[in-house]
Image (cartoon, rainbow, N blue to C red; front, top):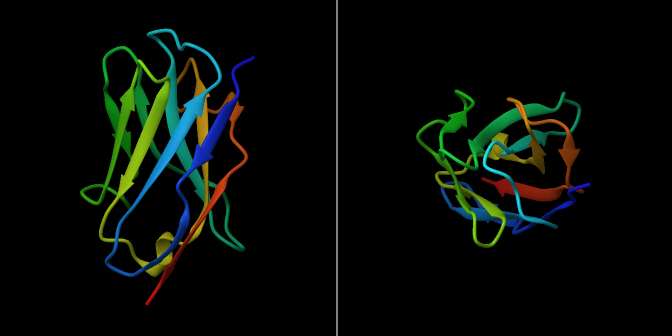
Length: 118
């Protein structure tokens, strides 16, 4: 069973940037998809972005398009979420996810807090 561990959350002023990382416990096959979800206080968990390990195809929620970029380093079994132009409404716990189908929801990391203040 693959395990996913996130890092990189923190506190940032609106307009700033953060980069989240997610490292898998084992080598990922080409059809594997890694993704990110987030959950803000009092709200449902929502999809943020995903990337296919093999092709590198990216997927984004409309709310983050043009501001967030997902990438992966297959040699390190790691995906990254570069978050720019952060807004207070981006404040949430961000979860790394993985799976063999889109959107990836089979495996979840423990979550990392991102707080954006104005």
